[in-house]
Length: 315
Ligand code: ATP
Ligand code: MG
Image (cartoon, rainbow, N blue to C red; front, side, top):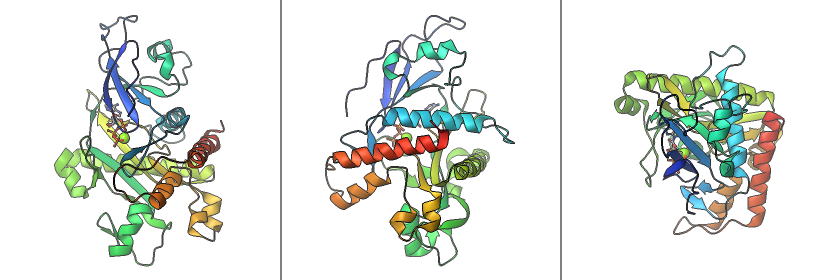
């Protein structure tokens, strides 16, 4: 993995597979507008790295960090207010459309403008809050074996790509760096975070999925599944964090193709990194270092990411 950028005013503290996290170098004193970000702030910088099957691949996807950050910010905005929704608190320090908030603009270094989010540093729940509206991927593999998804029994006769009778909440334990995330039961989430927080995570995840998939549908897209992460702020408020509803954290399909497609590949024409997963599955035995992605796969993936952003936001 390349060495993280040095950013003026910020200190690098962590790199995940895709993102680099920074904290303020010299936290500003309260009320000091000039000296830097306050201590409870964090900079989340999305790189162009792409991961599949828990490996970071070479090369990156040019423009990916910016595309996915733009998409995340757009979704945060959609979810924050809007029609009928009571608004879901999120971790952004300010609206990144930056109408009037010069602070944010000043605090995000020019080197990473467009692919960085200035957020409040939260205490994260160690849970990946997965919601599945459709059956595919690992869920389909399990269903084919045992008729269940993450241990939840489903009616017989469902096929790959089918819509589920209702969206399923299937949490996973967010393993510490270097380990694999692991699907867990709802009861296990209660043990991990307490009954009240477990219920809040589930309810918020299902609610956001419902709102987001309805909105996606208006743009001719199916939100097949997605993953959220939440934290709590200093007041204990459950807050939506991380990236949201990006093509890294979600599966998006073309709704018309899904309805009319003759083959599975047509039905699940996707706007996410399925292209990368499929190529890798066909060209790598999952032993050792994955082979480099061919330029054609890189370009097709980038094009699909751009198309998703365009379809949703009109950009
Ligand atoms: P990987 O995605 O490689 O499995 P990861 O999820 O730890 O690992 P990234 O997604 O690349 O790595 O990095 C983002 C990290 O920042 C995650 O650990 C996520 O939980 C954390 N994070 C996101 N938003 C916040 C926030 N507001 N406060 C504190 N941590 C956050
Ligand atoms: Mg992550």
